[in-house]
Amino acid sequence: MEPLAFSLLLLWPTLVSLNGAGDGTWARFASLPYPEDNLFLHATFPEGFMWSVGTSAYQTEGAWQQDGKGVSVWDTFTHKQLSANGDVASDSYNNIERDISAIQTLGVTHYRFSIAWTRIFPDGLLSSRNEVGLRFYSHFIQRLRDIGVEPIVTLHHWDLPQALQDRYGGWINETLVDRFSEYARFCFEAFGHRVKYWITIDNPYALAWHGYSTGKLAPGINGAPRVPYTVAHNLIK
Ligand SMILES: *[C@@H]1O[C@H](CO)[C@@H](O)[C@H](O)[C@H]1NC(C)=O
Image (tube, rainbow, N blue to C red; front, side):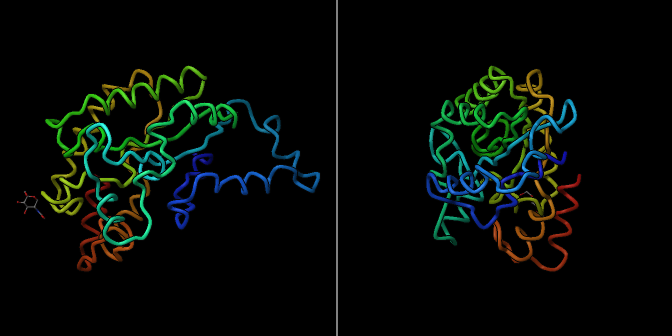
C-alpha cells in the first residue's frame, strides 16, 4: 500500500488552496539538478508496481449542495469554525473530464478517491438514496476504467452525514457500525464489479482523536477522556 502514502491528507494544513496553487510544486520537480533523478524513472520499479495519486471527496469535489447531496460534518465544521471551506474546493464534481485528463497526464496506474456518503445517501440512511449521486460515482469509475486506471475507493474519508451526527452523536454511537455496514454493502454491490480495491475508513486514529477529543477536526468534539476510545472501538468494528 506504500504508493497510497501520497494521499493528500498528509498535506493536512493545505486543506483548501486556490486553483493553480499546485503549479509551483510541479515546477520544483520539473528538472532535478542531480543525476539521481534517474532513480525516479518508472523503469527502475518492479513490474506491477502500483503508481497512484489520491484525493478525498471533501477536499476536491466541491458542489457541497449540488444535485441533492446532504450536509456532512465537514460542511458544518468548516462553516462554523474555519475561515476556509470545501464548498467549491477544486470543483472536481463539475470537472470530471478535466480531472480524468490530469490523471492520464500523470501516467499513474491507480487513482484513489473517496465516496461522499452524503452524495448517495443525503441523510446517511439507505432510505434516502439519491440516484444522481450514485450515477456520478458510477460514471467516474467508468471513465477511470476507460483510460486504464484502476480505481481505489475509500468508503469513508471522515465526511459523515450530519444527520447521523445529529441523530446518534456520530461515531460515539455503536449504531454507526451497522449504518456504515449497510452503506458499505450497498457500495460493494453497486460498484464491486468494477472496483477491486477498497479502503474502509481513512486514518481512524485522526478521526477518533482529533474529531472527538482535541476537536481540531470535524465534528470538533472535545469529548470526555473515554470518548475517543469508544469512537476508535466503533471504527474498528
Ligand atoms: C445512540 O443512538 C440512540 C438513538 O438515537 C440513542 O438512544 C442512544 O442513547 C445513543 N447512544 C449513545 C452512546 O449516544
